[in-house]
Amino acid sequence: MIPSALPPVLAIDGPSGSGKGTVSRCIADVLHWHLLDSGALYRVLAHVAHDAGIATGESGELGRLARAMPVAFIRTADGEERVLLAGRDVTYAIRTEECGRRASEIAVLPEVREGLKALQRDFRHPPGLVADGRDMGTAIFPDAGLKIFLTASAEERAQRRYKQLKEKGLNANLHGLFQDITARDERDQKRAVSPLQPAPDALVLDTTGMDIQQVVARILELARTRFTQAAPGY
Ligand code: DC
Image (tube, rainbow, N blue to C red; front, side, top):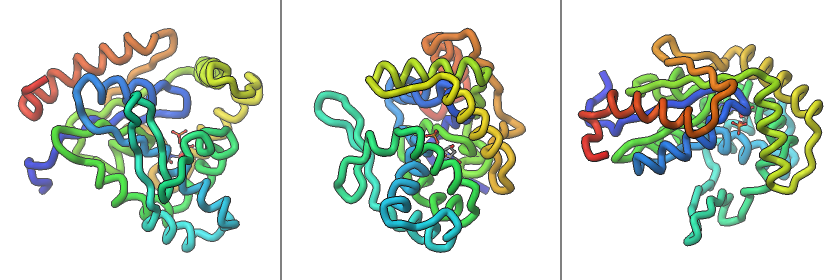
Protein backbone atom coordinates (compact mmCIF):
# COMPACT_ATOMS: atom_id res chain seq x y z
CA MET A 1 0.00 0.00 0.00
CA ILE A 2 1.28 3.44 -0.93
CA PRO A 3 0.71 5.96 1.87
CA SER A 4 -1.83 8.56 0.79
CA ALA A 5 0.38 11.28 2.26
CA LEU A 6 2.69 11.10 -0.75
CA PRO A 7 2.51 14.21 -2.93
CA PRO A 8 0.37 13.78 -6.07
CA VAL A 9 1.96 12.95 -9.41
CA LEU A 10 0.77 13.78 -12.91
CA ALA A 11 2.62 11.45 -15.30
CA ILE A 12 3.06 12.56 -18.90
CA ASP A 13 4.59 9.89 -21.12
CA GLY A 14 5.03 9.58 -24.85
CA PRO A 15 7.52 9.33 -27.70
CA SER A 16 10.10 11.93 -28.79
CA GLY A 17 8.53 15.04 -30.23
CA SER A 18 5.05 14.39 -28.86
CA GLY A 19 5.25 17.77 -27.14
CA LYS A 20 5.66 16.26 -23.66
CA GLY A 21 8.49 18.57 -22.64
CA THR A 22 6.78 21.86 -23.42
CA VAL A 23 3.40 20.65 -22.20
CA SER A 24 4.83 19.33 -18.92
CA ARG A 25 6.68 22.57 -18.25
CA CYS A 26 3.53 24.67 -18.87
CA ILE A 27 1.42 22.47 -16.61
CA ALA A 28 4.00 22.47 -13.81
CA ASP A 29 4.13 26.27 -14.04
CA VAL A 30 0.35 26.69 -13.90
CA LEU A 31 -0.05 24.27 -10.98
CA HIS A 32 3.13 25.47 -9.24
CA TRP A 33 4.21 21.85 -9.07
CA HIS A 34 7.72 20.45 -9.43
CA LEU A 35 8.86 19.09 -12.77
CA LEU A 36 10.85 15.98 -13.55
CA ASP A 37 12.38 15.88 -17.04
CA SER A 38 13.44 12.24 -16.86
CA GLY A 39 14.79 12.25 -20.42
CA ALA A 40 17.35 14.84 -19.31
CA LEU A 41 18.67 12.35 -16.74
CA TYR A 42 19.18 9.71 -19.45
CA ARG A 43 20.84 12.35 -21.60
CA VAL A 44 23.15 13.52 -18.80
CA LEU A 45 24.15 9.93 -18.11
CA ALA A 46 24.86 9.35 -21.83
CA HIS A 47 26.91 12.54 -21.87
CA VAL A 48 28.96 11.62 -18.78
CA ALA A 49 29.54 8.10 -20.05
CA HIS A 50 30.68 9.35 -23.42
CA ASP A 51 33.08 11.84 -21.80
CA ALA A 52 34.44 9.13 -19.54
CA GLY A 53 34.90 6.72 -22.46
CA ILE A 54 32.43 4.19 -21.04
CA ALA A 55 30.94 2.08 -23.82
CA THR A 56 27.24 1.20 -24.09
CA GLY A 57 28.10 -2.42 -23.36
CA GLU A 58 29.53 -1.65 -19.92
CA SER A 59 26.16 -1.86 -18.24
CA GLY A 60 27.42 -2.42 -14.68
CA GLU A 61 29.60 0.67 -14.84
CA LEU A 62 26.76 2.71 -16.36
CA GLY A 63 24.42 1.57 -13.59
CA ARG A 64 26.92 2.65 -10.92
CA LEU A 65 27.36 5.99 -12.65
CA ALA A 66 23.57 6.46 -12.76
CA ARG A 67 23.28 6.04 -8.99
CA ALA A 68 25.99 8.58 -8.26
CA MET A 69 25.23 11.32 -10.76
CA PRO A 70 25.64 14.79 -9.18
CA VAL A 71 22.99 16.39 -11.39
CA ALA A 72 20.95 19.50 -10.56
CA PHE A 73 18.19 21.36 -12.40
CA ILE A 74 18.10 25.06 -11.66
CA ARG A 75 16.28 28.15 -12.88
CA THR A 76 18.26 31.33 -13.24
CA ALA A 77 16.93 34.69 -12.02
CA ASP A 78 15.68 35.45 -15.57
CA GLY A 79 13.72 32.18 -15.71
CA GLU A 80 16.18 30.21 -17.86
CA GLU A 81 16.48 26.52 -17.05
CA ARG A 82 19.90 25.00 -16.61
CA VAL A 83 21.13 21.45 -16.13
CA LEU A 84 24.25 21.21 -14.02
CA LEU A 85 26.53 18.23 -13.70
CA ALA A 86 28.81 18.58 -10.68
CA GLY A 87 28.30 22.32 -11.07
CA ARG A 88 29.17 22.30 -14.80
CA ASP A 89 26.54 23.60 -17.22
CA VAL A 90 25.56 20.79 -19.63
CA THR A 91 22.21 22.29 -20.72
CA TYR A 92 23.12 22.53 -24.40
CA ALA A 93 25.53 19.60 -24.59
CA ILE A 94 22.75 17.15 -23.68
CA ARG A 95 20.28 18.51 -26.24
CA THR A 96 22.12 17.41 -29.38
CA GLU A 97 20.57 14.70 -31.55
CA GLU A 98 23.67 12.59 -30.96
CA CYS A 99 23.29 12.74 -27.20
CA GLY A 100 19.59 11.84 -27.59
CA ARG A 101 20.55 8.81 -29.65
CA ARG A 102 23.11 7.71 -27.08
CA ALA A 103 20.55 8.23 -24.30
CA SER A 104 18.11 5.99 -26.14
CA GLU A 105 20.83 3.33 -26.51
CA ILE A 106 21.74 3.20 -22.83
CA ALA A 107 18.06 3.43 -21.84
CA VAL A 108 17.58 -0.20 -22.94
CA LEU A 109 19.89 -1.39 -20.15
CA PRO A 110 18.11 -2.68 -17.00
CA GLU A 111 21.08 -1.54 -14.85
CA VAL A 112 20.66 2.02 -16.11
CA ARG A 113 16.89 2.08 -15.61
CA GLU A 114 17.25 0.66 -12.11
CA GLY A 115 20.15 3.02 -11.34
CA LEU A 116 18.08 6.10 -12.23
CA LYS A 117 14.97 5.04 -10.33
CA ALA A 118 15.74 6.54 -6.92
CA LEU A 119 16.96 9.79 -8.44
CA GLN A 120 13.67 10.16 -10.34
CA ARG A 121 11.50 9.35 -7.32
CA ASP A 122 13.39 11.95 -5.29
CA PHE A 123 11.68 14.65 -7.35
CA ARG A 124 8.35 13.91 -5.67
CA HIS A 125 7.81 16.81 -3.30
CA PRO A 126 4.77 18.81 -2.17
CA PRO A 127 2.64 20.30 -3.55
CA GLY A 128 3.00 17.83 -6.45
CA LEU A 129 5.07 16.60 -9.37
CA VAL A 130 4.61 16.67 -13.12
CA ALA A 131 6.75 13.76 -14.36
CA ASP A 132 7.70 13.78 -18.02
CA GLY A 133 9.15 10.66 -19.66
CA ARG A 134 8.51 7.26 -21.18
CA ASP A 135 7.75 5.11 -18.14
CA MET A 136 6.53 7.59 -15.55
CA GLY A 137 3.06 6.05 -15.31
CA THR A 138 4.21 2.45 -15.69
CA ALA A 139 7.49 1.98 -13.77
CA ILE A 140 8.49 5.08 -11.80
CA PHE A 141 5.17 6.39 -10.43
CA PRO A 142 2.65 3.58 -10.97
CA ASP A 143 0.47 5.26 -8.31
CA ALA A 144 0.31 8.59 -10.23
CA GLY A 145 -3.12 10.20 -9.81
CA LEU A 146 -3.34 11.07 -13.50
CA LYS A 147 -1.49 9.41 -16.36
CA ILE A 148 -1.42 10.95 -19.81
CA PHE A 149 0.17 9.33 -22.87
CA LEU A 150 0.82 11.87 -25.62
CA THR A 151 1.26 10.75 -29.21
CA ALA A 152 1.47 12.40 -32.62
CA SER A 153 2.35 11.08 -36.07
CA ALA A 154 6.10 10.59 -36.69
CA GLU A 155 5.91 13.14 -39.56
CA GLU A 156 4.44 15.81 -37.30
CA ARG A 157 6.93 15.06 -34.54
CA ALA A 158 9.85 15.41 -36.97
CA GLN A 159 8.40 18.74 -38.17
CA ARG A 160 8.10 20.01 -34.58
CA ARG A 161 11.65 18.98 -33.74
CA TYR A 162 12.91 20.62 -36.96
CA LYS A 163 11.20 23.89 -36.01
CA GLN A 164 12.54 23.71 -32.46
CA LEU A 165 16.13 23.21 -33.61
CA LYS A 166 15.88 25.97 -36.22
CA GLU A 167 14.50 28.36 -33.61
CA LYS A 168 17.53 27.61 -31.46
CA GLY A 169 19.76 28.39 -34.44
CA LEU A 170 20.92 24.76 -34.64
CA ASN A 171 21.50 22.70 -37.78
CA ALA A 172 18.62 20.45 -38.76
CA ASN A 173 17.67 18.09 -41.55
CA LEU A 174 14.01 17.11 -41.71
CA HIS A 175 14.50 13.74 -43.36
CA GLY A 176 17.32 12.84 -40.95
CA LEU A 177 15.13 13.84 -38.00
CA PHE A 178 12.26 11.68 -39.27
CA GLN A 179 14.58 8.69 -39.60
CA ASP A 180 16.05 9.32 -36.16
CA ILE A 181 12.61 9.61 -34.57
CA THR A 182 11.32 6.39 -36.11
CA ALA A 183 14.51 4.51 -35.16
CA ARG A 184 14.31 5.82 -31.60
CA ASP A 185 10.59 4.97 -31.35
CA GLU A 186 11.36 1.45 -32.43
CA ARG A 187 14.18 1.07 -29.87
CA ASP A 188 12.13 2.66 -27.06
CA GLN A 189 9.06 0.53 -27.83
CA LYS A 190 10.86 -2.77 -28.24
CA ARG A 191 13.22 -2.76 -25.26
CA ALA A 192 12.59 -5.52 -22.76
CA VAL A 193 12.60 -3.29 -19.67
CA SER A 194 9.96 -0.55 -19.33
CA PRO A 195 9.16 -0.31 -23.04
CA LEU A 196 7.48 2.87 -24.20
CA GLN A 197 3.78 2.05 -23.93
CA PRO A 198 0.78 3.62 -22.23
CA ALA A 199 -0.04 2.40 -18.73
CA PRO A 200 -3.35 0.48 -18.77
CA ASP A 201 -4.94 3.35 -16.83
CA ALA A 202 -3.38 6.12 -18.96
CA LEU A 203 -5.41 8.49 -21.07
CA VAL A 204 -4.01 8.47 -24.62
CA LEU A 205 -4.08 11.88 -26.27
CA ASP A 206 -3.19 12.16 -29.97
CA THR A 207 -1.85 15.68 -30.44
CA THR A 208 -1.52 15.58 -34.25
CA GLY A 209 -2.97 18.86 -35.47
CA MET A 210 -3.32 20.28 -31.95
CA ASP A 211 -1.23 23.17 -30.69
CA ILE A 212 0.48 23.26 -27.31
CA GLN A 213 -2.18 25.52 -25.74
CA GLN A 214 -4.95 23.10 -26.68
CA VAL A 215 -3.07 20.13 -25.24
CA VAL A 216 -2.24 22.02 -22.02
CA ALA A 217 -5.85 23.15 -21.61
CA ARG A 218 -7.15 19.60 -22.02
CA ILE A 219 -4.72 18.13 -19.46
CA LEU A 220 -5.34 20.94 -16.97
CA GLU A 221 -9.06 20.27 -17.23
CA LEU A 222 -8.44 16.61 -16.38
CA ALA A 223 -5.98 17.52 -13.60
CA ARG A 224 -8.47 19.89 -12.00
CA THR A 225 -11.04 17.13 -11.75
CA ARG A 226 -8.60 14.48 -10.63
CA PHE A 227 -6.61 16.43 -8.09
CA THR A 228 -9.24 18.62 -6.44
CA GLN A 229 -8.73 16.88 -3.11
CA ALA A 230 -4.98 16.51 -3.40
CA ALA A 231 -4.37 20.12 -4.37
CA PRO A 232 -7.43 22.22 -3.60
CA GLY A 233 -5.45 25.44 -3.79
CA TYR A 234 -5.15 25.90 -7.55
O1 DC B 1 12.75 12.64 -23.83
P1 DC B 1 14.16 12.66 -24.36
O2 DC B 1 14.23 12.67 -25.87
O3 DC B 1 14.98 13.74 -23.74
O4 DC B 1 14.80 11.26 -23.89
C1 DC B 1 16.04 10.80 -24.38
C2 DC B 1 16.05 9.28 -24.41
O5 DC B 1 16.01 8.78 -23.07
C3 DC B 1 14.87 8.62 -25.14
O6 DC B 1 15.19 8.21 -26.43
C4 DC B 1 14.54 7.42 -24.33
C5 DC B 1 15.18 7.63 -23.01
N1 DC B 1 14.21 7.80 -21.91
C6 DC B 1 13.71 6.66 -21.33
O7 DC B 1 14.04 5.56 -21.78
N2 DC B 1 12.88 6.76 -20.27
C7 DC B 1 12.51 7.95 -19.79
N3 DC B 1 11.70 8.02 -18.74
C8 DC B 1 12.98 9.14 -20.40
C9 DC B 1 13.84 9.02 -21.47
